[in-house]
Length: 182
Image (tube, rainbow, N blue to C red; front, side, top):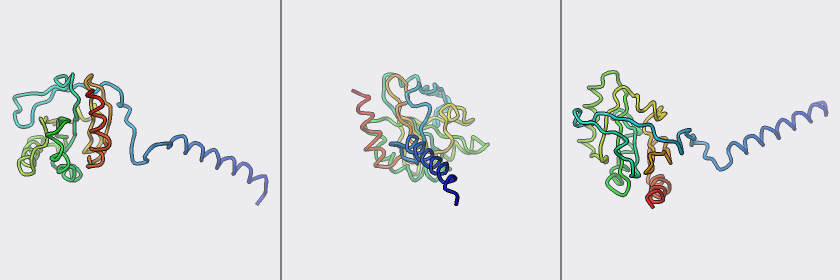
């Protein structure tokens, strides 16, 4: 191979390596940063799952630190996450559930969500139903489960993509929630 060809190839490899190090420094490659972190959480007003005549608005949570969890009864990962939420749901950090749209028939999905909570327990302070998926879109949810820790001013401070585990709860969510509550 020509030695003059090796010089540009070596420079290119160094450049690629430097870009990789800068982009990945301190980041878990499985975590996708959210553009919503440290931005106001999108406001929503949705029907309550169990009592559709009543609504819940995210503005009702101003002054409180809370977690909003987008989930669906159809979601396998949500069912895996459910026991963890049951363990921590009635503790220091109130968890509000958003029944994430899946099927075109929102009536069946509402019934499926209520059946799952009746059978497996309800870890949520309150559950709302997002039949058209508009709130989920506003939050940038592209799969379930996804959760957002929101501070007293209504600002998103943490996003969890995928199931919350004991480790995520105890090492990320709970410490940050305690800090935000001070």
